[in-house]
Image 1 (cartoon, rainbow, N blue to C red):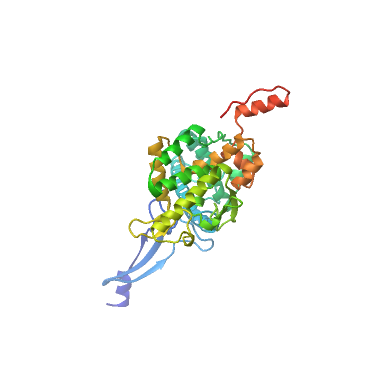
Image 2: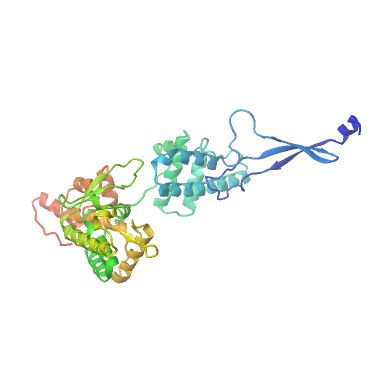
Length: 391
């Protein structure tokens, strides 16, 4: 074949391939989602002899493709991962992917209405895009706390991108979301007593652990993870302190701190340490050589180690069945705070024992003065004595 005939039969075409899913799909932020790419193919009478890839992107700033929200969100999470726990990062990841779908939907609606400039790029979002999202939440009658949560996560992303649109809209009073005060999860005196009786109905080592949890946690204020991963050496029965070796925010911003063991929890602590020693000796182990304060013996392997969440949740469910009271292990922490506040312990002291940075967190989520006590305090200040009803 002559060169001219070969040139005559040579055909060029571009094949378009897409990597990634459809717009608005639930892609993980850890997955690659490359933009459209074009492949140049030279076809000859004998078939494709060469295939050359050429990017369809223009020179200059790298294109973010069809998914600018997800691309930015992936980079954002990778840069802030050291400041959050893995569970918190997973929650933010999940909500950002959901917001990406919502903004994709809002963009498609805007395009159908003739607005081709609606942006889903966190760097370029303006008041129009945020107003559309606010309208979407209002139309679905979302709970104010949920709206506040979504806007907080979205603002974290836009602030990271150098876009202060949400901060400016708040300053200009373009919207206002009033979140009602959170209901405190402190257990009442009756519920706490029923839970204690339910724990006493459980036999054996599981019963000893159940009684330890329900009789000690309301008087030390530890979080479930902090008590689950506590070590024997963390307990100081001389000064009655707990060294919190695994606090919230460890490996990020938290440091080792101490928590008190108040008088009602001290005898249950002594009883548990005696039961722990008997349990470990029955397994042929030296109690002082086992690191975990709350040891768990695997029924399959016989190994003794720390509890995991599932074991503690199963024990909690068993206590619930015995007591007839629904609760969560973390409810003992606000119960600790409210018990102290009801005994007129100052809010600063309660906040310190909970290891909060400010008293605002303590008052919003853990302990508040009860109405009748506040009224009685005001009456005393004005010279009128009234009795305070017993809890």
